[in-house]
Image: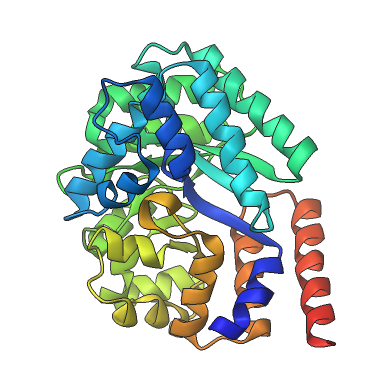
Length: 341
């Protein structure tokens, strides 16, 4: 794996499962915590490492929401968004579909239009100045109930956000059944958005079936439990429905107990289209380059195999055909040049 790190560092990549607030670097989180001293989040970047050690998934959600609470005005939103793109550019991430949860900000008093204007301004600046193309997935925080679903859907449909391409559902799965969100996904899909809910991370395969049947999912966030149901794996492979796999995240939240036993190997063996992602990278002490290194070890990949993994993300993305062709060609050219050395 170590020998592959230089190749991975330069490999052009796309990322499809990465959260907006969850991508805040310790430096940015520390700065925000200093601005908002009523928060329990540490202001010392080193103390954040201990703060981001999770007992279980419920504790992760608790910590995550405390960081969300640091985003209190449009300036915070814009700063965070641009700095996330800066970190992506350092990893040669060319394209990312960033999961954004507007409800977390609007419920704290940031007007819809100001929130959208802030992320859009950052998106345009990131593309012009950093060469990182960002698109948005507006995400329902499931733990906040149907009120959040209604608000997220309204913002997605009414605000006409240029960078918005998809509609998601995150947060805890236990006690938050997928079918109740069907009317909201139906409205978002009717408005032209693609369906990308989380499912099967901390619950069983039925949650994934529910996401497919009720929410008309085109990609599945995590899908960790899919390997427990051979018929589901066959369905995912046959219909080329991608899984957004986040190995280190699954260990950090205790969704998977042992990295060497991660089900990604069985997913790939079953012919499922697998993409590798970082989820909430600073919180989990990782980044996309590290996750590619983990995947190389788990799947026994060489440079060509890693390039194929990168192209999986391009195929599974909601980039337009010309954009997909351009990024895939860039991956091929980089790999060919590397192998000629």
